[in-house]
Length: 492
Image (cartoon, rainbow, N blue to C red; front, side, top):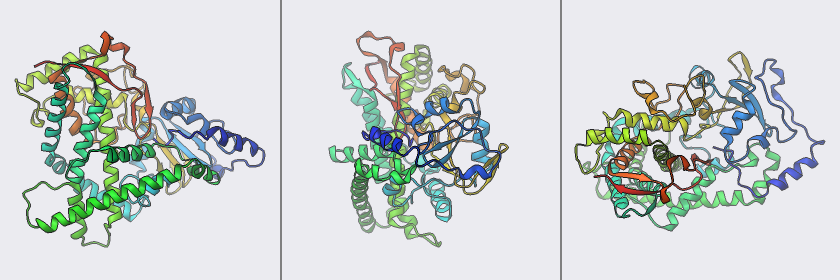
């Protein structure tokens, strides 16, 4: 997700680099290790950067490393990067040597936005890393907590369904509606209420955009001035300051509310309440200060608002392109709905085909195709190769999910492959790594079930499903390049 390049100064950068091609050459700290993974040819200074920058780096990495096999070593500027493109390699990194590869590389934009990488997703390996992840797993995103927000998900789903009903068969931007729903769910779950208005929406859009922008200073430090010249550093700092001001207001609002209603346990806590309670009740040496709380909230916004909506949008896109699958899913949902006005979460557990459709969507359209980059903390022997400490690691989950040696007809949308399968969303099956999105799937299942239960969705102007543009673009997540415009007509 860190290679989407949007800087208009890139030609200037290349010109500047060419001037110095014969003056500075890449050195390789890995030469002391004799058995390195196979690597691709690279240019001085920039290494392989020019081969992966663009809108779809996951596809570029497949082209770049397919001759090298499941492990390949490339250079992004001065940074050695190990690319893993097989389930076996992913298992070795994420399970066998998980401690060695648990840290994260220092990324300039992320570091600025998340208070020095104090968040859940990007904090480097160490005591803070252990404590903040423990809080996330045990307190924020456990099954009981996710279930406690069931009412929020159902209320917001009903609002979206009613909004579509009011369209009277006219053209709607389904992706925009689903995005609005997920924003409202995440706001209510995290902050206790929704936030609408151009100012908040603009801030959230700029925040998520920056998380997917390439920062040249991460890979060629002596060219970090380019990020300043382009205005990237200034824009990042401005977003960080605006988001900090917003989150400070949220914290004060919650602290004051707690003082006024202290002792009232009848109301479901939002995640800010949970974090503030942990802060007050802290009995360990770990300090959950305000910056850590705000950084954690930013992670939840990033993961919740973007990946959730993109999964539903891709699922509807595939269903429109595959009418047989759509009819089969509508039949299953209708059987369990039994004439209700809408589907509720209690109905979802038995809808195995619904779950299969979403799993197949996640396989073909992995929300984070390159997961989150990792960094080795020490030398390690990996699949017979010597990997030096400080090597950045990219797992191409998108390539693994389309590996023809693992998946029959790997490029086709076939939900049936997941029926009677034990593969789930938790990341324990290394041929299927959708980023552990338990919270997101609770929303996706409910929204998708209600959409296909209540409406038939067709493309405008009589276009056939196979004509739907499925072009993709990668920023923070893998999303549709063009809006999903449909005409929805009531079924019940």
